[in-house]
Image (cartoon, rainbow, N blue to C red; front, side):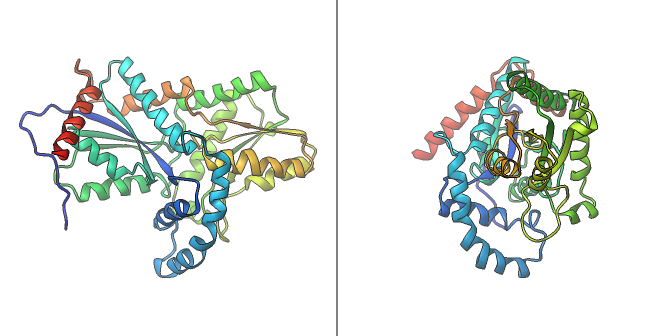
Length: 363
């Protein structure tokens, strides 16, 4: 087994703590080659596609990676920003705001963003943190609801990195916060703020990312945790049962996925006479292709074409103050027992060490 070259251990080195905020990932550019690289990594993960490789690889490389990248790139182009991919932009901003929030509360930690697929990768960020002297890492998933297809895959990536390391830092994982009071409160605040400006809808649709139905029968808690999030959010908003619907989006392939599906539900609501519908995506803490294109564009067109009059997409939590406060509270609970209250500015110390390491590498 090949081991990475690691920083020299220094006796008496003070413990440094980091929070690694992990999201799904994104192509580097909204182009077919970049999307192909991203999809090849994403769809090769056995956590994502639970089909034996001998059967799946010919389909992936012979069909999907030949036809899908150009179509997906065109969709990415409709949501790309001057700063880059919305998912990456928001996740990195959340990491910066989380660092500021924890620092203001007296917690001296390094906070970085990482992507399960694409860049910056989990392994690259862990390498960088170790070079900076970090000895303890809290892996904070940007997935409120646990799923083997997402949360467990992040754990796989972290553990694969650790399996190639000699000096492994202490590791902790935040696997879920689907019923966290701060998270639910931030969602409710986001919806209320939107309604205060735009008025209230006839019906609210809560759209979560879908997964194959077989994952539910195999013991994945994702479906149950989505239902609980939806119920708690409706309670926080004071919505009666007939005023909201929970759905699942982003179906891929021919297998049956958990239902009800988002777009057909919206079409049926329009056919039943619902004039205005609002859609919120509680399972996504940062806006991305699945919210800005699939919901705000495609689902909107489907609802209006089916006879609806007004469609409103309520943005994700992104950088809302309520969400950053909730995220900081979640991090603090999982940091408990690690001394992060030292007066030393850990971020500045880590930056200094990173610069020193880079200068040494250039010599």
